[in-house]
Image (cartoon, rainbow, N blue to C red; front, side, top):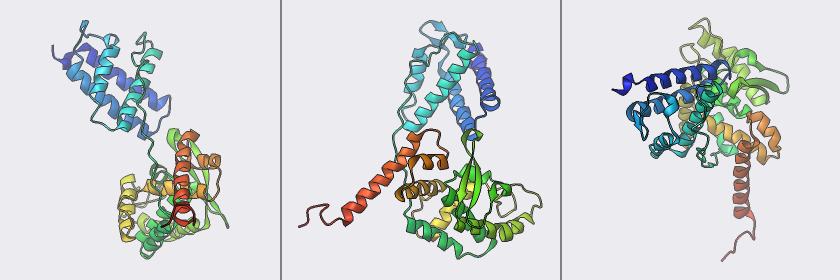
Length: 319
């Protein structure tokens, strides 16, 4: 019997599809999370197709016969992946098997005793304030519709700490302009919305883009509901934003690894350095857990130590 005809494999594939539908409709998970779930389950299905034909008890004819030993053997094949990828795949399988127990497909959860892989704590890289200024001011030298748009993108990313997915999802009505300070409605993970203030620099850039560049791009398409458009008048993509920032960073003679997330990291770090409390920064970033925001505290503390070491006359022994 080939695995392609295996009842267990077909059952597993059908249940995975049902789980993804449940995650989309019932749990309202974001597209990025659903994409991750889909990729992780497809990977597990591929392993099942090649390996889960038999176990110690004999031929596997049902998903109920998959054991914790089978799961652990699968996990051993993940050694070539990064710690983050392994942790995500384990998390996906845990959610999947919890769903199967809740739906009474399984009596017991074979993932119950599997420990979630610990993700390495990586302190994000933030730009210095003068580097952000150089990035924006260099881009502002391009006064074309494209340049005006790119300045508005950079200003809004740095002014709000938005994720790139949140930026591309913006519509013109999500930004409210006031005389001193505006605001923007960002839709984050799990479709949760938050209201974030926007300073005058970003508001001016937004108004210039709305008055000058967006109508120019829109004339090529006539109908588009997104705030930011590409050169053809279509919705701008996450890939477009990454490419824009990469090019603009190179023009400003910055590290070619500058990304949309670099501006988010810089936003959080600079707020904390200036005295913002961590709870407020958590709300502004849209973090569910304050533990995630604490990473930026570590970054801020490291920079403070560097400044102290470089400037205090008695920080280190001098020869």
